[in-house]
Length: 519
Ligand code: BES
Ligand code: ZN
Ligand code: MN
Image (tube, rainbow, N blue to C red; front, side):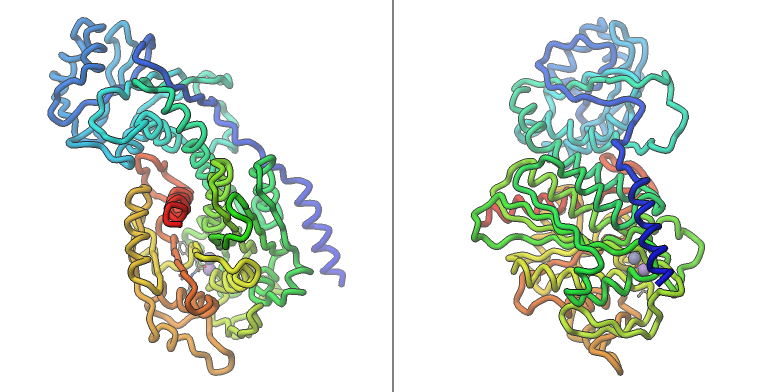
């Protein structure tokens, strides 16, 4: 009893201490869209692979009395895609960022990458004008796609840096994208793409924050803050007593070793017809994964602060879709718990009774993601009967070893659906690649004393999917995403800086868009 009271007091104190602050970069960036009148000190331009200057860039070069063209020749700059060059002193400009645009017509993904390259080359202390006219593309409002790439590529988490960088002053800088038809680009960016950016940034913030500040209840507060004032959204945060009433023995079990109680967060967005079945997104939200009694080794354990990446992607996606005001019904369920070892923690060999009634023998307390997801999935099927169920989780090291940092694992029971996911991911800029799930994987998780056991060796990613699949209704359209490899980058990509990727917001957002068109 004493322990219970001190737990309650402790979690209350911690909840009060936590404030989800807006993440203060030294400078805030404002995005503008303008015509071809360029009066800036710092600019960015793009050069095709054939080296020929577009009319827009030729006009810029003329302002430098042709010295820009000479500089490009002297630098032997050939416009290879993503290649960067920084030129100084070509007055009237103080600096010119040159980025290669490569060969052929640019896709949405490539346009975003180009924006990201500019962001990574630019000095964040002054304003910048990006000349987007003249790019070889058939994509409409390409300036908006470039801006999205820039916004994603310039993300930085500076909350815990005490020294203000460079000037030391907080200032607003403007990044302007210059094109013809800039008004439509501005509209697309402000009413759509920028909401996706905000969703990705939220996910990155949550995945980067230490476990000390982000635990189930503080995460729930972050979600509440994110959705504050967003229309047609309802947020429910389920605590321990309600979980007990729902017999969620798996989620409760995983969370019971921590001073921070688990939470099941349900965010619904009802933008579609009232009677239309929703799409459900279910995310693993382990705010820190020590492995529990099956303790993880020391090396790299700090990175387990981002074991809530699935849940963060779910929140970010719901935000983007809701802010855009899509005509769709969407439910996001986030299964939040901290996986800690303690005298109260579950043990290897324990048997947990899930909400579905099925029992799971816990072979390793480090295979906790599948446990929390089993109850979340049962809940969402029972309450919402979704027409499409997608779960997303940093589930297995096995997925990370198979795919590295370039592909999320997709597992489905339907090859057409897997192929749809690959196609959507490719366009969205977050790739997935399939792994199998068949009856042998289900056979492997048979338990001697319970209905199933939680682990069964190799192939780890498919075994994990089989455990989760045990709780997915037969015949339900289901996609399992294992993002253990892609959620954290050791090296920057154009639109994703090193660190937490916020992986899944762009992917899931694209899936939701496509599902609406398919209706
Ligand atoms: N959160 C980890 C998976 C993970 C590993 C994510 C590396 C990101 C990077 C998960 O909870 C876990 O510990 N999985 C175990 C499962 C095993 C015990 C069957 C693993 O993959 O080792
Ligand atoms: Zn985990
Ligand atoms: Mn684990």
